[in-house]
Length: 206
View: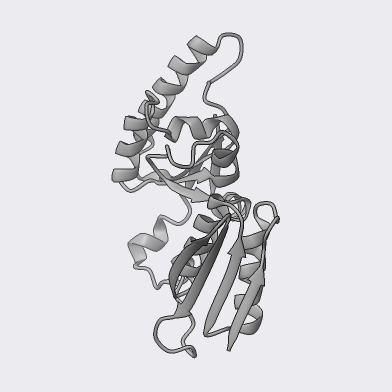
């Protein structure tokens, strides 16, 4: 069974939600989604991948056509991150998922130069949370922290290398024309943001 979705002009996270609903309700062997911006292309591609689809995307003028084909048996549901069988040690850590939510490139209000220095120090100190630090989400002006040339980029890359998940808002990157400059983390959408907030045991708002 094949499904085609026309998601041109839909704001985040509508393309991903339509793709999610189609996969969960119709269980297609293949699915094709047409979107009209790079952030949606990345988000839909990544979502299809988590559902067990082999993903390809091509650009047709101003449009992106994202195609997914089930790898393996269509009767075998794709295993997702939250469905894997975990060891006792891993299970014991489920209760300590700390999420850091950042919505600005500055920490605090009053002076942006000072706020930039404070944000650098904040990110540089996040490693002190140890294994409890699960995920960092960056929205609005905070996506600038993930862009090439930002003083915080190297510290974020170190955190990602240590195993911390970093999600960067695709709509925000597109707004600031930074999609091509992003150097760390995965481009994300509001569905991922809401799901992450639900799964976290603790949220730290920077």
